[in-house]
Length: 290
Image (tube, rainbow, N blue to C red; front, side, top):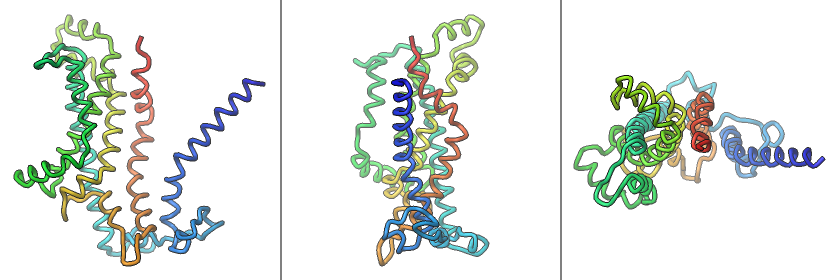
C-alpha cells in the first residue's frame, strides 16, 4: 500500500510540475487568439470562457484570411525570423565546434599558462558567465562601431558565440571525461594522429553531449534580447526585439505579442522534439562515471 501511495505521490508531483512548466506556453497560445476584453478579464479556457479569435495573428498578417494578402508586418516578421535563424544557429554551430576542440584539449592534455593549469583554465572559462552583460555594452558598442559590425548578422553571430562558449566547453569537457582515454591510445597505436583520433573516434561517441550543448546554446542565442536591441538597427534585428516592440498608443498589444511569441517558440519546440533522445543522453552522461 505504501508503494502505491508513493507512486501516486510521485506522479502527482510530476503532473503538477508539468502543469506549472507548460502553463506559460498554454497562456501564450490562447492569448494570441483573444480580443482585448478576454485578455483583460483573464479568460483562460477557449470555447468556455471565450470564443477564439484570430486578432493576434491577423495583426501580423498570419491569420487564414490574411495569409494570401500583401502584408508589410508579415514581411518584417519573416525578416526578423530569418535573422534569428541565422544568428542563433550560426552562433550555436560555431560555439559547439570551437568549444568541443577546447574541451577535448582540456580533457586529454595538460596545460600550464602562468600559474593556471587545466582546472584553473576550465574555471576561467566558466567564470565568464558571472559577468553581467550590461558591463560589456559600451566596450562592444565602441568595438563594433570601429569594426563596422553594428547592425550586422555577422556581428551578432560572433558575439553570441562568445557568450555561449563557456557553457559549451563545460558540457563537452564533462562529456569527454566520460570517454576512456584508452580509446585515444588504441587509436594512436593504429596510426591515427590527435586530429584523426578526435574526429573519427572520440567525436562520434560525444555526439549526445554535442547535441545537448547545441540545443542549450540555441535556446540562449534565440532568446537573447539585450545585445540584439543594443547592436542592431533596421537590418539585423531579431525576433525578441520585435516581440518587445509590440506596444501601441493604448498600451501593450498582448494578442500580437502572444502571436509573435508563439511563432518564435515553435522552431525550438520542433528542434527539441527531433533531438530529444540526444538531449537526455547528453545531459545524463556525466552522472554515470565510475
